[in-house]
Length: 51
Image (tube, rainbow, N blue to C red; front, side, top):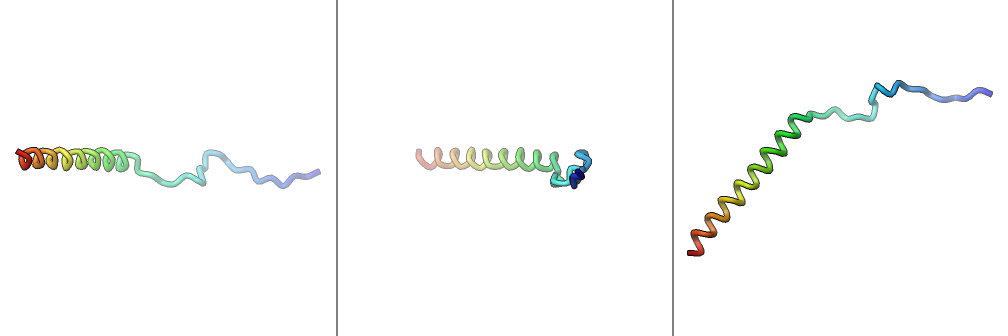
């Protein structure tokens, strides 16, 4: 009995998308730092307006 199985090398990574890990890390880091900076200055402005 003959089986018709297609064997592929698992090292091919045919389903893996090309990614830029360093770029993703830097975008996340600077994005979060920018958001926290905006929140910080917003709270400082609110503090001075409340007085």
